[in-house]
Image (tube, rainbow, N blue to C red; front, side):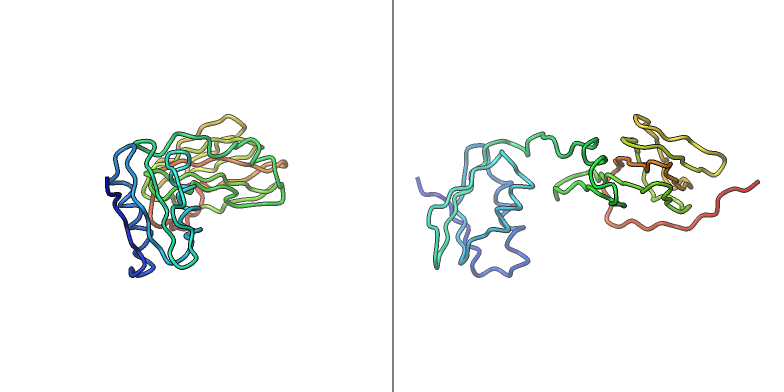
Length: 199
């Protein structure tokens, strides 16, 4: 049986990885193709490690130095379910860090997720949320969520729904506040300023 080759040596650099992942997506379980390149594709191998960990096989057929041939075999029909992060450990490490301390990385996804840490007494200023619903799961510390008409106390274990375009601000307590956000994937995120209700 003649194995199919994908020769990317003459392709423009921005076209190479998409073409390779398209070829991989077209495989059925157990099938493979041989990638032909003029250098060792270390970044591609790292990308397969993020996108398809454990569900593919990477085998050097011809390891350079002028021509590299790598057999890429599909072992599973989809990317495999896996643990991405331990939010408790991540929230407890490096207390000086602030902002998004973890982000969902795979490119082929429908969701976005971030682990956000606010330092003790830190704040996220009042803003109108994006045009999508967001779930927030508090994993460490305490704080408060100010809405248009009131305050929601935040403590570990709380799961909070932020409806699309809802007005909110966050304030961390004396031990800081860490929470996981989950929402539909978006291309860009813009915060609109909002003044809290004072009446």
